[in-house]
Length: 333
Figure 1 (cartoon, rainbow, N blue to C red):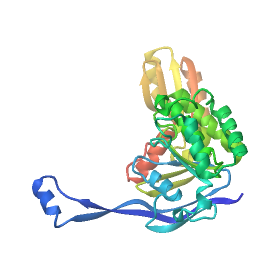
Figure 2: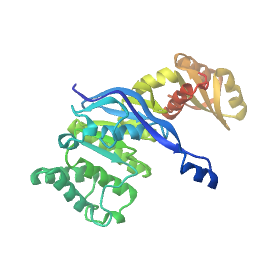
Figure 3: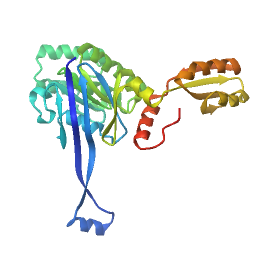
Figure 4: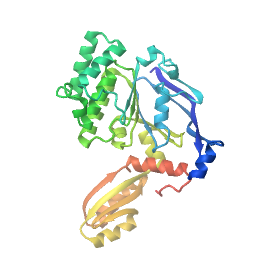
């Protein structure tokens, strides 16, 4: 597959002022300012191939949005290089901007007081989309996102979930080859989150667009992404498959059992590391290689009513990545 996005030691550093609180410090800063450098992104390097959907993960302040803004051409880096579709993003060439789109869950591109369809017509004019192509794309997006009842309503009258669906549609009218999604399900309810995930997956399947997705909802990532990139304090910690990440950081299984009595639950401690007890429900942590043997012993020696075996939640795996990077002791296996 062709490489669509390539970053090489991309960095962004801000120079910000510092001063103490109080009137005297404020007066002093008028004549003698103190500055410090804040490294938002440091030496980020990775590539994305055509058609990939990649999760870009990290806590608040990790540098995710800064990276997306550089790739979308909104920010100029302090160092390093990037190529997207053969273009340098921050040159903001028309040929480049016509092939990408950036959707930010906490930003509004639709005009607030007019129907969403009118904003679509504005985008048609901006991107010079031929009428036949525009109508065909709108019809397809209306079908995929169930927008037929929304396009004629003023945007201010839409719910957050409805507005996000219209925002997605507006960003895709010009059929971008690369889509940057920054928290696209932020603040919407669980049902709408599921609809947006399904739409992104279907859009990727139909068009082959490359997608770089940031989200704090791990369900977004696990539903859409086979590969994840993890950053923290602006530095890359991991680039690989979701399964590889779990295997590397959390090579264990969670065995959840319901037993007949609290006394039986207390005996479960001899079968593995107990991570949670709730009455007669016990959660054990056991190495993957020993999971089958542990389950056999539990069933043979305890009055088990119900039993499930699960991989650790991806949130927990990501949390251990950050703990390891900070020099803390990861949770024992």
